[in-house]
Structure formats: C-alpha cells, structure tokens
Length: 443
Ligand code: TRP
Image 1: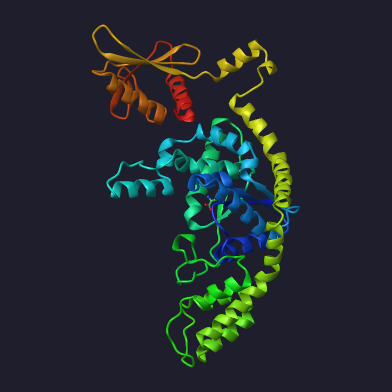
Image 2: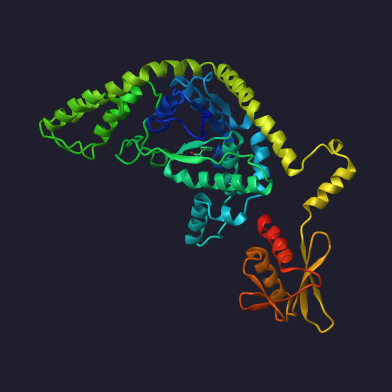
C-alpha cells in the first residue's frame, strides 16, 4: 500500500507552551518516526495574518515555532517541513477552490458563524469587524491539505468541520473537472492525546492566560510550577489525584512507575510544595536537552531560514506539477498548445442544453428546452409571470428528468404539475438526458 500522508499546520500566532508540546508537538514527532508514513508539517503563516496584524509578532512566532519543532526532534530530512508563505501554489489553489465553493457553505463555518452570532447578540451589524480572511479561512486550509494529497489530518474537535469542508471542495472539483485530482482527506481525532491543565486548573490555553511556556529558562519554569493552583490541604493530609492539575501534569511527563509512586505519595499526604518540586523535576528532565537545542537555534535564525528554504524546495517538488495539471484542468492553458479547430470541437462537445424563456403575444411566459445541438425538445405551457416559469425551470434543472412523465395526449408532467409538451420529433428520453446534464453541472 502507498504511504499514508499525514499533514499538520501550525498557525504562527503565539509562543509554544507545555500544552502544545504534550498535545501536538510530542505526539506528532513520535508519529513522524513510524514507517509507512509521510509527514507534512508546515508553519501556517498566512493563517496567522487572519488573527495577528503585528508583523514583528508574526515573524517572531514563526521563528519560535520552527525552532520548537526542530528542537523537539523533528527531522527535516525525514519529513516535509516548510512555511506556507513559501509555497505560492497554496494561494493559487485557494483561488481555484474558491471558484467551486458555495458561499452558503462558508456562511455555516463555525468560526465565522460564532463571530456573526457575537455581533448579533451585541446588536451590531452581523459582519462588523469580520474580515474576508476569516470568512475564507476554510478554503485556504483546504488548499493546504489538498495540495499535498494528505490522507489524514490530525486535529482537535474544533477543526473537524474544516476537514469535512476540504473533502467537500475536493470532491466538487474532482466531479466538475471529471478526474480524481484530489485525495479526499480524513480527520484523525486524537482522543488519547493529553490536554494539559494550565496554572489555574482549566485547560492550558493562551486564551485563559494560564500557560506554562515550553522553553522558558529553568528558573522561570520552576517559578511558574510553584505557582500552580492547588487546594488548601495541609502537609500530612491525604490528597486527591482526581481533578488535581498537578497530578495530571505529572502524569504527562512521568513514567508509569513514577506516576504510581506519586499516587501513593498523594494518599500519604505529600506536601504541595514537595509535589511541585517533583513535578518540576520530571518536566525539566524531559525539556532541558531540548531547551539547549532551542536556544542554539534561536541564536541562529539564518540556519532556521535555510532549513525552511530547503523544505520549500522539497514541498514544491510535489506542489508545482500538481498545479500545472490543475491549471490545465480548469482551462488556464497555453494558447499555442491547441489548434483553433480542435478548440471549436472541444467547446462544442462541452456545450450544454439551454432553457430559453420568452413571452408570447398573449402575454404569457413560456420556456423551451433546447438541446446542445439546437434542436427543440420541450415547449412549456404559458405562465402568468416569469417567476412562475422560472420556478419550474429551476425544478427541472435540479431534479432532472427522474420525476418527469409523459401522458399521451395530456403532455409532460412533473408530479401533478403540467409542464408542457414534447417538441415535434423529440422523445421523452432526449428530454431526460438533457436534464441530466444540468443536474450534473449543479447549475
Ligand atoms: N487551522 C489550524 C489551527 O488553527 C491550522 C492549520 C492551517 C491547519 N492549515 C491547516 C491544520 C491544515 C491542519 C491542516 O490549528
């Protein structure tokens, strides 16, 4: 079986904390070492621009995140490690996908909807302060994924909808242009992965301001851990492991044997100060060697830059040929590559049947279905308004010919509704075939 491609994007809008490490970086790097897997990790700096408009912060976060992943053991020779904005094929594909994406689908994207709901609740204009960047976010993310043919995208629950949208856009493009250009990705929801509690016991998250920096120096790490919220049980009093942020953090960094020992120590009433010392010791034991590599990398940003440049070359070896194919697929083509007569033939072949609407002398509104070759197939009854005629046309386009039947001497019916009559020499089958072309195009 071909290798499984796994792809992860990291938005460059913050500084990695311990929660990112245990929840994303550590498991992702472990997964990248498995055989039969091709791993793609990229710095989603175009995504960062949606949230952050401070250039220095975007740059610094990109540097910190790149240095963190490398320091934690990501091997750029083994994986594809690149920066989104170094791959011009990503925004290029974003546009191709934008043109097959229903705006209504994007209206329903969680992040956009949440922003609209908030505005509405506050009595503001629905779109107040919302950029088109936020609105288009799912399309950009789909381009990230589809460009590299990812099979699996490990994400948290909040991102599952985006993966479904990427599938949707990819399937729609494949269908429209008649070939399986895109692999349809699946979300891999990591249930077993640790979500760490933060300093106040709630989930560690930048938005709660309760994070422990991943690569703060040892003294700062210790100080933060000593400030971890606990209950007020005195030394000697037995303590609950259940619901204890300290215990959960300990478990995420300790061996099973160390965890078992800490569980007994809790039952025996270990003092919080001592437990925190031990927590600091296990975390620092794991982080210290990486911290050293991190500091060395941060001191040499040019080295990180050249790793990313090499990563871009490697990634574009996949992206450039695919985009060439996609441009061809949608008709962005070299005009010298086809003769005018061939082109006419191709246009004719792709021609669709049309509905022509018109008004008769009696003032009624009619429509005709005309085949691609110009032959009339169906002539409608008269309608009082163009809107009424248009509604029947819309139904015929949408439903195709499946529910259309011919009653000899009484004309063509859509369910109970009389549509009109077959044109002279036309057969019901021709009408049904013509309608199928509309359903297929989705117009
Ligand atoms: N939107 C993701 C997040 O906020 C980051 C991201 C961008 C991403 N592009 C991606 C994740 C593609 C997976 C695949 O976490």
